[in-house]
Length: 308
Image (cartoon, rainbow, N blue to C red; front, side, top):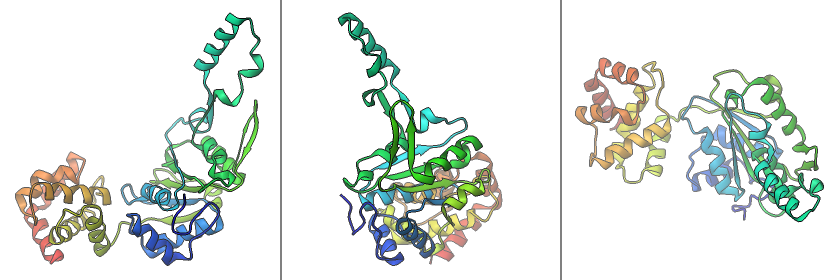
């Protein structure tokens, strides 16, 4: 069931209501993102979120699912993805077993082979044919993750589906969502998403959180971390993001690092602990070497001063 007044086809009271509801379900959004989410629900438009990896784009769809009560349907994009992985395919193994069983009885099953009992619904078909889409509960939340990894042909196919939330299965007919799903599309911008898809969507660039909001996120997601350590870790990560690393740490890495330090019984940063736990926040050897060359004492000293 939907909660907080959001059901299939309805919208929250406003951006501030959306922001509060997201926070209640574990996501601290800034005003811009909360407004974009509010408008996506109100206008029934897909929401395209771009930004660096780790800023919390995917988590938006997950928290929307928790907030609205709609089923989360995730389509992970990758190079070469096609209709069989994204929309539907036929369960050929079950069809073959059915044929063999029918042959043993001398029955003709040709008309039964392409019925819904043998249809394997992938994320896109489920999104337009689920119960919520027919007024039986909250609309599903469709997450199309890392669309920039898919090829141009799939992006064009995706645009066609999002234009009217319909999928045609030649053997069965057309499935159409009476109420559209809530659609969140994410991109890490490894390539540009085509203008046609952007025009179909509302758009928001997701930034890394500012210092105070990142501290609040750490305290929310890692309650075992004391406030002083949360502030120092957020301050250290803020510095790391300014070092032109190959893979700057995202919010998830900030939380992981703070949790690792708390698990080691630390209540504040020190040079040795930072050195031995860098793998919790930096996942490339080259980045770790750059940070060590920059100077861990300076990193710790500045983090403690910033977090005070």
